[in-house]
Amino acid sequence: MQDIFVARLMSSGVVTVTPDTLVEDAAELLLEEGIGSLVVVDDDNQLAGILTSTDFVRIVRDSEPKAETTVERYMTDEVVTAEAGEPIREAADRLITYEIHHLPVVDEEEGVIGMLSTTDLAAYFSDVQKPSPSSA
Image 1 (tube, helix red, strand yellow):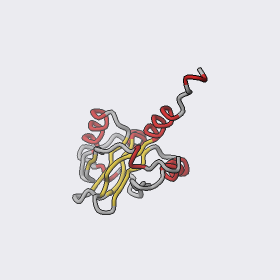
Image 2 (tube, helix red, strand yellow):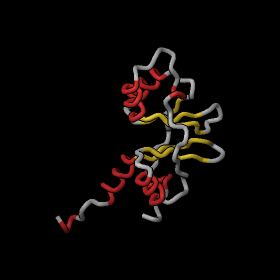
Image 3 (cartoon, one colour):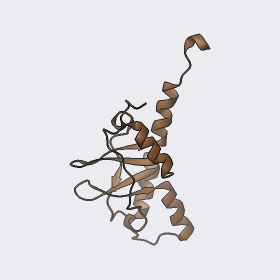
């Protein structure tokens, strides 16, 4: 597992929003795309925050969002990230340590380039751990 890098397992084509995106629009995007998080980026595609389905639970718990409420109000702005070239074990350890489900994959020049999720790891390990035909 030490030879597997984040770039191999991450999802590219990350769905992003800007800090001024309305919460209602962000919620609709999560549902349309069938995803659990949105990466919040600035005009240069640099990471500004992350908004997850857990954040939406908090939004509903605290109060219904008022019209014109932006993502910036609810996003997590101190985001735990990964880099494409780091070993997958390090990224997996970070998911466990911080008890999170999504790691935006960032590049210093390109900004956000992907997303690594617990679902990506589970899919990888389910393929790796298939029993051999001789053990069936």
